[in-house]
Length: 370
Image (cartoon, rainbow, N blue to C red; front, side, top):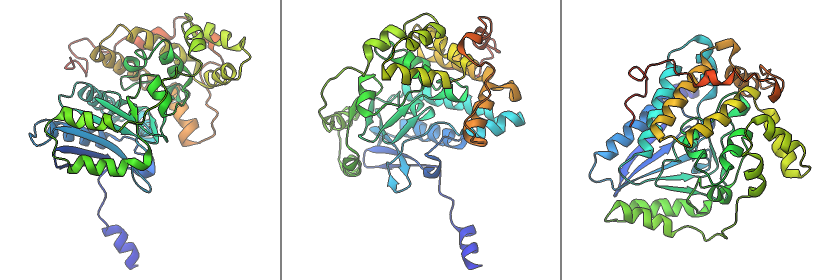
């Protein structure tokens, strides 16, 4: 009985730990069992920490990392809490809408932050984890990084500013990653323009300690010191970049699929298999999203994504996203029943509806972003 009492009286660990040490503000995402998947509470805590650090003259720069099961680092963030998305969507819970509004506002805050913000993207970095790292002034990957925007496989789209940062990858890498959900490693993330440098995992604890104990004179000095720790890598092109640029520049998902089908290489067949696992409807949405975002600023892209995510969830039972999450994370049968069997079944009138805003410019939940 005493063990049970002890467990009940044990202090609840905060899901985000923020503190000022030396001249830096430190943020640790602290939900290791869930690979630091973001809850609404975590989004709010992160936002508050960044606002506090912004106004604190002692803080020259902000560092962000994830907590792994074995200790600090290990995994950065596996995205948003998709089980919560599923429950809230079916229940018609308004906190789902609050989550996306708060999360996208946080993404904007990070991209426009006035102090250096340095993200240590070790282990899994997906979805929402990309949203809180891609706006960083220094994006650090490791030899253990596994990065992806795999949303099409759960009937969603690469949100959190995904349209903005994927569309700015070299060539058509953004379309390739957004449509197939392909996982990439640290060096590939650098080649894709989604990271700035690599530091091996075993060096991170000492590096973090040094950042906390060094009397830096400016935020730029903090950034320069982190950049000086990068491992020298060969400057190689992203794997299969010529094929990616050729196939993923084609006008429609159908043409992309057919081109991959006609290429017998292992890469093309693997890419095709990933594309065919995704929601056919959302593949159409995502291709349009990334291409529209190429000519948009960040604030407009986030407003567009807020419109898209509204359409993804408001259908409840007949939502592709609710079905995709059910198959992956709830029933775990890995057999989503998509609204369409294949890319060619999606009518040309179906996907543009996602881009129609349910709000006027004056009532849009992200109207304040500039």
